[in-house]
Length: 336
Ligand code: PMV
Image (tube, rainbow, N blue to C red; front, side, top):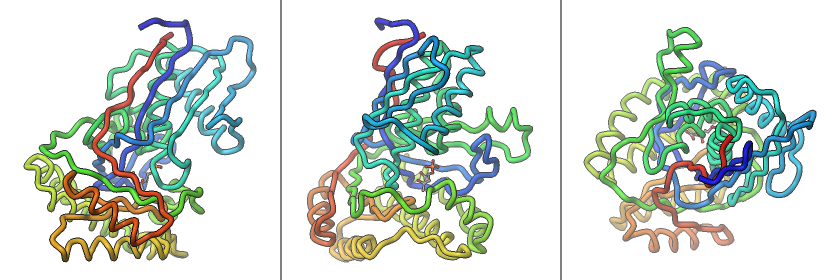
């Protein structure tokens, strides 16, 4: 790999959880309350370049061609501070990141974004990390980013809740999950604008105020075990059933929060109805949703076009994209 000292570029794809992460037990270390499991997509990559900038007094962050401000700038700088601390370096950097997905719309732009940033920043600052180490690092930027370090299917371990902070940090990382399945995920972008409440704020509020949260979290272990087994035997119906009840259950915890957090829009509900109709017509199609109104429908590759047409018809004006399992984060070039 041809290297310019202190410059590195990485690419990563978003992932969609089939067993969701919702709720932290440690905000600073980004330690989740439950294990989660996702599929990394083959669409919407983020490409991020990190260039060390000797002499600069602060980091420069460019997101999709424009200087980042406020919270986005602070999150990237805080992440780079972590990398600098571990690398024993103080040089500031110029970060140039390009998403191919609407940012902040519940389409996992923070997952691909922080996975790409973790790989590029580790290389630019000369940190040598194995995949689990990159996953732990990406986790600190955004929890779901820990899973985008890996391709196809990945489980993110919550780690031991009673461990010391140091051991808890070491125990919480993602790793690949074996799956005898190559499904499609039909993504209905019913609304591409940024969400009204960040997932970070919404999960904090849900854990603090929703009487349903404990029940959902208590069921996560069974959902995870069932999901692993269903993936291993290539059982699309079981994968879909678990993914759908886990996601709708997560939204139920938010609806019961005080006050409620509601990401579902009328268009989301229309698509959910259409998915039920597809199942009545004997098409194996199952829905999942994240912190936004967009709906993702899991189905077989063979049914993907039929499902995409049904979704387009149900939500006119929405953008519909058919995705499949995609690759893990990787360094394109460079290194410290
Ligand atoms: O990693 P965050 O803070 O963007 O949270 C992601 C939360 C969900 O997308 C709703 C669920 C998940 O597991 O990805």
